Length: 495
Image (cartoon, rainbow, N blue to C red):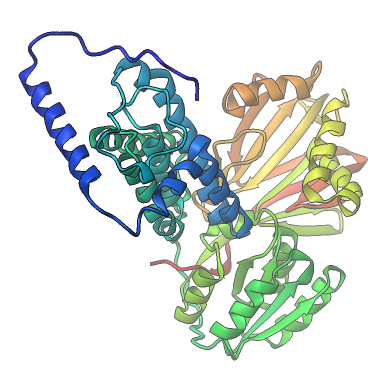
């Protein structure tokens, strides 16, 4: 916060309405100062100080992120973004436009007063704006976290009047501005619920009130122990098989042979293997996100054990498309994306380092190493001539808000492959990064897009890498990508 010590009084003149409002504001301030609130004296001044410079809200955001749930992380990020916008508005426009002096502290008991009085102008309250912005932003992503944060935010706002540093109207205006900032952020970056995946086409699936017939394979490397414990309580008759990553494929095959419903908890690679087993055995699939990104589960609308259990118990589900790739005798499926070029190289480089330094640091290191390489990892024949390509991306369904990474899908059964190509040229990585930071990837002159049901690539060089749902394989010669519409039945809550 930049100090603003110009406490210039309002211009002289007759303003009857303003005078009445200011007089009412002063009476409310004096009324609050005269009240005796014994339970508040040891709490509110400390709470007010803890919110200085947003420290309280950064701590709350860290606690939400530590919950390791996608909704909690999104709520924390949206709350901080809303807080930042509100603070910038207050400090650059609000306090410099209405230069209202702080209240006189004479009516306020000494025990309530802050040890260090603020030196900025009074209107509007920055603390109230930050509190309201953070609470509103959090509630837009997670009503549960919003309900937990709201009483604290309200207390922080009220503490500014209680300690005598703001008039009630300062707090009300600050809170209104904070809520407005949260809505402005939502307008720029819609919440996931605003783009909920359509619950279509619906599938008639077995309802398993206690989980009987569900065989759940859990990848223990995904750190899903807490989620598994919750499943045992909610679905006591389900069979849960925990296994190491190298045993997942074998256990999925065994589970599919005896299951009525095949369940899986893990990342996108584990879910891909489970979908393959479910398709081969004609079973519905129940997916509980348990990895780092969980693109398929989140686009499907299953974010946590509660939504997973509700869908399984009620038998609610939909049918989704499956992408397929073929190269000679090698065949496979993808639920999210399939790509050739620079992205498979990034995945391979990340896997090389992840076991030494962790997934996220390895991803950053891999991106730096791959982007620095001024070369074209893929060539394709266009019009009878070989053309260098930096990336060929095919999404199982149309992706929205494409940037440096794919955004999200609103429809998992649209029958289309979302094909994006980044052409070669001088330093394509640099040009692509510049376009992505300036706006959507689609604005880059190196980018082209088409939506098709089938794509054939000829004359692919030997040793070319193909990535599908985070896994990598080698292809050569002719590669075919195509859609299998509505091939897989998947549980998801539809109400």
